[in-house]
Length: 335
Ligand code: NAD
Ligand code: DAU
Image (cartoon, rainbow, N blue to C red; front, side, top):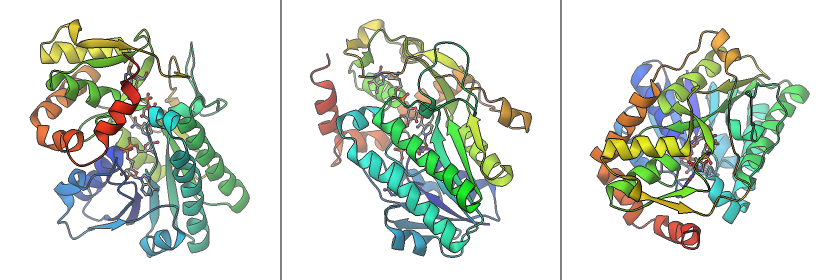
């Protein structure tokens, strides 16, 4: 099996690439990644020397690049996307380009080259917010942010290419994912690394927004299941069943690091902030998939990973990248 993994230098994509190389002797991986601010070859260092792994730097919107990288592959898994909701509010253009046009480019290459399967890695955010109950795969999509709207645009193209051209494509819609190697702009790694540096944790609004947390290893096992056994044209929700308020997440981080609530800074809410996400994962569970990581254990292990791997995140937060610039731009007037 030869796989093209797009966006494999990011948080979840790199976990998926490491998993394929480390757990499956018969899998070869070509990783195609543009190395945007969120792409990081350090995430792939554990497999960099493996003969079954190849890295190609390139853009999924560039058809020639995708065609060359896809030569001889059996399947494509697409993680490549702009992924941070706050950045999509500040600067949406790149989201439309990568998440919509990039997905279109991949679909065209799958169509032209007759590639066996494509898994589009999408998000529960396409469904929008839900006060009670849970979203099934049949729920209407009502995205709230430029990020989730661009992901929804990608999903709709995938489904249309299945219906019109019969392409063997599937969609996973994952919930909020946590674990090692997550770029420290997202809630958990931002709060943990800020706390480790003696800085404040900027909690939006009343801190009562709810997310359903999924360990990155469980997210990857769900995607792997769909890649191997999913039905073309189908959507699969992948969730952890761990709904927590942001306040609850913050309390566990404070407890693990022995800090008090003085470390919280209450800041202006995110515009259009979805109140609650909740996924019904019955479809995938009925086929035998299950998440395995206990949430509180997984979160505490993750907090300890950031504590023990300061070199990894210090380079991002204080190196040559644009992390500091983004933090200043987004948070300066929110306090
Ligand atoms: P990430 O931001 O950590 O990584 C994204 C990767 O895509 C980076 O390596 C980046 O360099 C690459 N990339 C961006 N634009 C590209 C382009 N035009 N061409 C090639 N590569 C490009 O993202 P993540 O958190 O690992 O998310 C991966 C996927 O999973 C995304 O599609 C996201 O929508 C989805 N998802 C994420 C979560 C989550 O909680 N993180 C939950 C559900 C779904
Ligand atoms: O639900 C899946 C989605 O989860 C993915 O599709 C996205 O790519 C991923 O970024 C994530 O989106 P969220 O917006 O839910 O994640 P984020 O970590 O940015 O925020 C989680 C919650 O924490 C949300 O309610 C906003 C809040 N928050 C976030 C930040 C960055 C804060 O209170 N303060 C912050 O500084």
